[in-house]
Length: 250
Image (cartoon, rainbow, N blue to C red):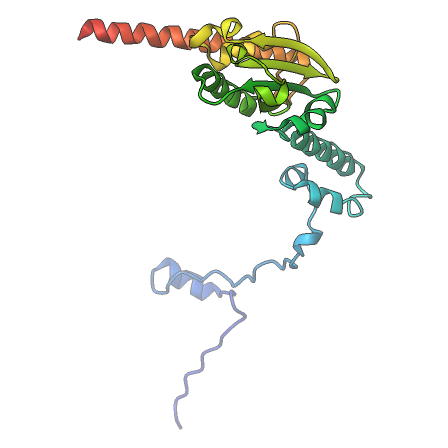
């Protein structure tokens, strides 16, 4: 009669006392870990995921407006959505300028006199070919970028005021609420031919909050201008001192 060898296999992961002894003696390999399937996690649609504060911070204004119905059941997120939307609208409102806009005489009333009452308008009267006009325009271009909530326009002097003498250009007119708030003829009040964006900014903001970066109130914007001028002045003095030291060492 044939000798049959029968091997009994228990449930996967189970072990007999004999197997345990053989493993301690090194006659059998270590017992394999029992197979455990990964936990089930149903796939969640991206549109149905919970919307956190960080998620809302990444949305654009149009997306936030579309979310109004979806957030009705969550008071906190709805309140935060409205606050975030208001911030985006304010930022867009503040950034509506940011450069010097050329205008003609026929544009003056619409662009300057009829500007909203909260907007300060800096009008630059110039003539091509006059070096002082080019120098002041460079300063104003930088200021227009720094203070996008202030409107900057430029117009040929005789288009704005017929027969305006060339000896008076460059000229700056500051308007607010349909009225002239300041007049600057030439470069004298800006430091002459050594004028800088900082010196122009300081002169414009001496009495009124003309320059506005769109962040905070008018007084904070004026304080920022003064602080910026002070910082630039210190940096310039330090740079000049370092240049003199380098020249002396050579």
